[in-house]
Length: 354
Image 1 (spheres, rainbow, N blue to C red):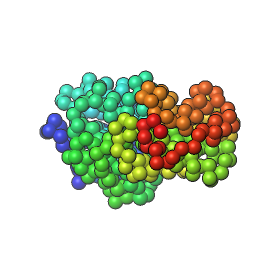
Image 2 (image 1 turned 60 degrees about the horizontal axis):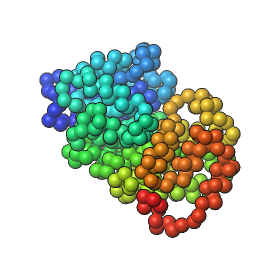
Image 3 (image 1 turned 90 degrees about the vertical axis):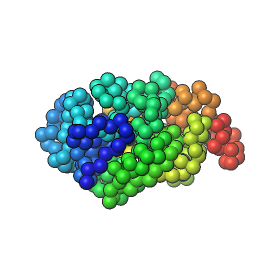
Image 4 (image 1 turned 45 degrees about the vertical axis):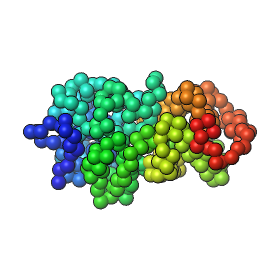
């Protein structure tokens, strides 16, 4: 059964389709997932060479090899052609590309903004904005125009139809409910909540903590260290989120602790792998060349560090990772500095300045 979102502004009279913006692993996984559920899907892939290869092989051999494309997915490199007939957009481009892509989309639309479900995690570098803030600024400020999908969900396991549970948040209860129905499937369970900011902060910051966990494991600091680091990291994520207006409970759910545990402990995590290689003594440029794909935790570390300084929130783990990535700080010295911080009450940890 075909199902798409239905705000008042959605045009009628044409074949409804879902447009997935992004040709990476997550965009591919979402396109395959939605098409497998019977929805007509168009996937916009910016790289013309990659788009051509996907059309010819029915497989994204660069970002998600082994996942076959259903015949109902049409792959387009031309954004204007991709938008034809679409009435629901799914955003799956890297965070630092969101603004440019949405500006282009908005300029090409001849109708009011289409509903947009965001699957992008991160904080914009120059503005320190969450994705929802970018959407409001350049695309639409209507509450029923945007929802965010997040949670513990590796692309490779989604396309294999392994049991996955995620959470979807929107300022519009109706949009959240309709998007929940759209994305839900036998192996893909979707919960809802209204805390967009909390879900976005958690989704961005868990990548930073995954870098930290990877560095810890690369240095062979042990299971005790990893457990302490992730627990303190969760408190740090929550503190930043609360300062930005999030509900602390969001961080104890799938989009918070669930996504953190997945990204910081699994061998499939790019961010953890980047951290591990650095923990083993490799430089950041060497690591990024070896990994070969975007690790959102790297730019997010800089954005989060600068944002925290602007709004007066203490993020010691984020600061430590920033110093390692961008200031050339030594691993041992940074560890010693973290361990030397004064002990304090855990009960104060979600306070903005805690």
